[in-house]
Length: 278
Image 1 (cartoon, helix red, strand yellow):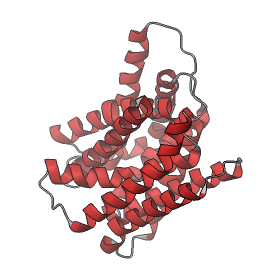
Image 2: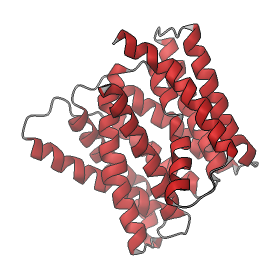
Image 3: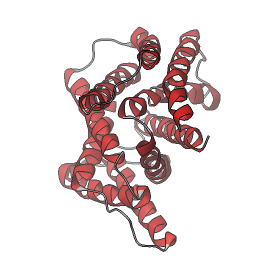
Image 4: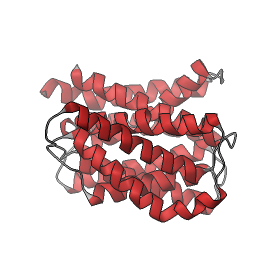
């Protein structure tokens, strides 16, 4: 039950991140480079404070590989969001995450059972049902960026499966990612613009929806096979759609409900065996 609760909390955080990014970049309340840097810096500051308040020595200090993967994800994801739509973006992002994590898991010897393959298939069909009807031919650069973001996130998640101190590791990774992103895109701040709402969304995205949620994710990952960790993330676009309907008044479409049922059934089929063995 604890694993299920933590996983659900993480997916809610990821979905909140999508809504905050959309709310900031969609109406052009802030430029994408400023949003990315504020997100990473606010996450690093929040997590450093939490590590300090915890008052005990860190059991892990992250890695430069994790920092590079996190910076790559944050930069590529946010930049891509300015070039392609949400539907094709979700399809490309989560497709790349699935390929990276499931492929790596199988290469490392993980062997899903037939019921697990069924669950994966249902969840992937649900993602297609949700996204494909809204997909148009994407901008090539935007599509490449979003797939790169998915690969980076898959790598970052795989690294987290070996985490012994999720808070300390995530804190160190955010600090490294903030420095790397500042080096990579800091020159774009010469053309920065932001209003108070955009700044607030960036800080909330970094400190809570990213920093805290990613820490919980690192706490969950050691208990999940790589391919299970990949599949549960397919709930994020569905949760995002449901929250958008609830909080923003967006349409609750039949397609969203069908996708919710398919992805939910797929996740249950893949996660339930892990809970029984636990």
